[in-house]
Image 1 (cartoon, rainbow, N blue to C red):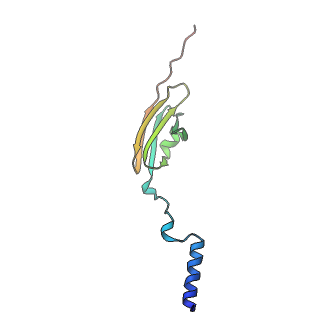
Image 2: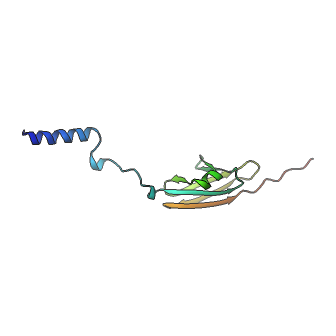
Image 3: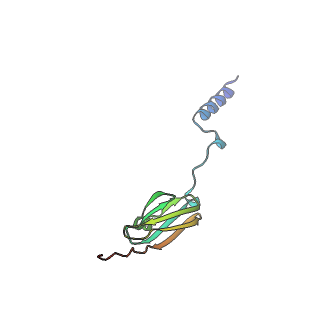
Length: 111
């Protein structure tokens, strides 16, 4: 084996051992391919869940949208003293805004 062939084999072996195999690696998704969910919720203390996974408070998700995979999401909105709301929507790449206002649970008077 000549020196050039030996060198080429050595470079290939090192690249293969550290995972530089070209087509075998997946590139991370670009920021453009993600869906960004912005939530405008009232009351301000509304908690937002996607498939029972906590995403954050409504006020925080209004300022900084959550980055999710595009596709169907099942959102739940809860706040103390308010009826919960549930929304199913499909997120596309880019920004999607969901606006929700939870209804207050009436207070019971003295019995």
